[in-house]
Length: 67
Length: 251
Image (cartoon, rainbow over all chains, first blue to last red; front, side):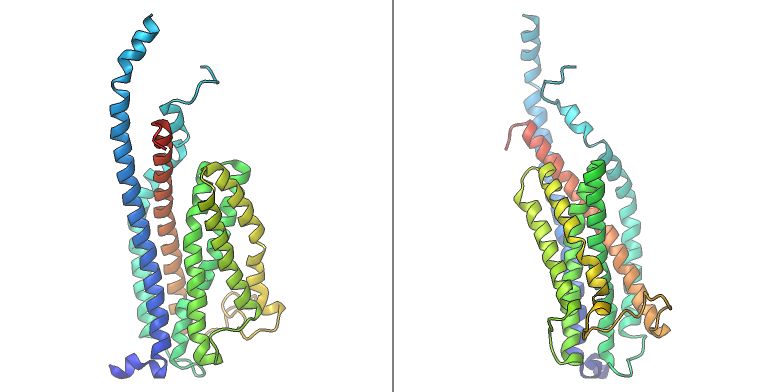
């Protein structure tokens, strides 16, 4: 087992290359999923906010057109 | 309808008719693509790290090739996707092309970075140096800087339409570097070995080494496609947030 991990004396180079690759790929996935979660949260907040803002605006617009 | 009146909520959202379809399609595709990615990369790791021979010259350090070469390919493919999408965005004004180009950039940059780092980790024991300023390595470093410039340009201009136009032009001008990277080992004297897989006379690499290389390359490609869809979803959501903020006067 120890012989396997020593990679014929190139352990430091081989394992850091694979470690870097896994790290960068995972970081990309995590950053992207976090980004989606953040945007979804902001979108939900804005949509409920927008619904609240528009709801009371309707009656006043109607009275304006009736005048 | 009065064309002078400012667009209503629904009119603003008509611009997202296409992205809405993309959201539905990608929603169904992402999970199966992620499964295929995981299977290919797991099999690739098994063959690359366990079930493949050491090289008669390079010894076990040859295993670095199974992450280095696919990273370099994807680093270049990412740029080609970005440049291709930029042409579509400029010429056809397709709303998704812009989003695709922007979303591909960080993935391509990451793979370009990985190609440089893993190449360096192989170069130290094999060439005796972390870095040489030769044609292949230098043109690859320029590719990474082109990615950085492209990402920075998107970050500098706030309005997506204007940012997209400028970034697309930068991507197209920079695309001249992609064939330079590819042919650099032919055109100039270099330490870097020439192509051994994509050759006119067929691959010159041993089949037991070609298998892990191809599994990794396919796995990385599926990873790229899956992540591209995810990033495009994030970008579409970000633009919806922006449109709503503008409409509600919250900027």
